[in-house]
Length: 421
Ligand code: NAD
Image (cartoon, rainbow, N blue to C red; front, side, top):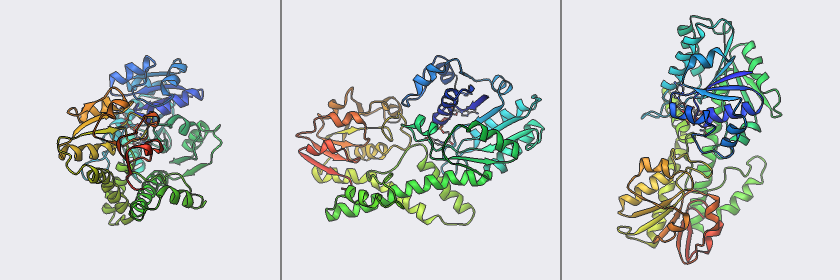
């Protein structure tokens, strides 16, 4: 099949590269010409393990452009993968989805054959039917359901292991507007062995939100248990292991620490809370999960102050700036509120991250960035904020380490404390 992918961020580029690996021909579209240039040179504009090698291996099957016309005219199916960031009031900013939809529809007006549009961006229930569908019809002058197909196929990949998640998902969800669209999306995934759920457009949208809200809540739950355990001298990780062996609970997402971040959980949780208000509901559990998560990273600084009560003038090392290991993504990284709090207390910061320093410099140009992890260890105390593998090989002996991510190797420090263990 010939597929076009609108938006070459984490989701769009992984989707394109993986579908190319599966034998399809891909045209990526982005408004950012620099990203387009890099992709056409086989260079990934983002860091994601294995992505650049996929782009190089399938160079003949992937191209990128800023031109919707080239992309739409030469493909049969278009995935919308543009961002849906949070607005100030928590609701999602649909302007990118709307703009992409208008551009797609304007080209489809000139196209004679049937074309399928698949929304992959995370959008609130009702968006595909109530916003994307009317825009497609308005700007193309055609009928969705007959001339244009429409489906919603949420993405569940995790940054850091995104390629594996895309190629071996736990499930595939296909929300469809009409039978022809259902069959076409199903056909794309015909060689996948996981369960495939076929449902309404809005149920597909809700499955994505409910899944992310549940996972975020699961982490906040174990962090709350962790905070109790720490006071009682109980090892939270033993508790998590004991809980996780119960098949109804499961061990994943029970690693307590400084909380969840990234481009998805915070904005999806905010969107669900705001949307609940809009429809006169109160998402109490999800609001509480968010509140726990807001406080959790600051506990790391509170613990640090037990050992160094006056941070003014002290040098504090921060190991890890990405919101999790194996990515350069710093969106809602827990290092952000921690560094903000350290600066507020007058500390000098020495930070290191294997991939995310360039991104972090755009937020905090004033802190000191180290050229290696070991350089951070010269600080008065060290905070572990991201669990990068290379931090496991450092020698923490003689140091003060306050750990937000449970790095076993750091336990040989002179003073070691975990955030909630
Ligand atoms: P991103 O911000 O990394 O990438 C979005 C891309 O879209 C950017 O490259 C931007 O330049 C491009 N873009 C914006 N407007 C455009 C337009 N009109 N035409 C063409 N390109 C345009 O976003 P992302 O992290 O890939 O997320 C995309 C969507 O997928 C979001 O809705 C997100 O919630 C969802 N999602 C993300 C993840 C994740 O881990 N990042 C996982 C699952 C779902």
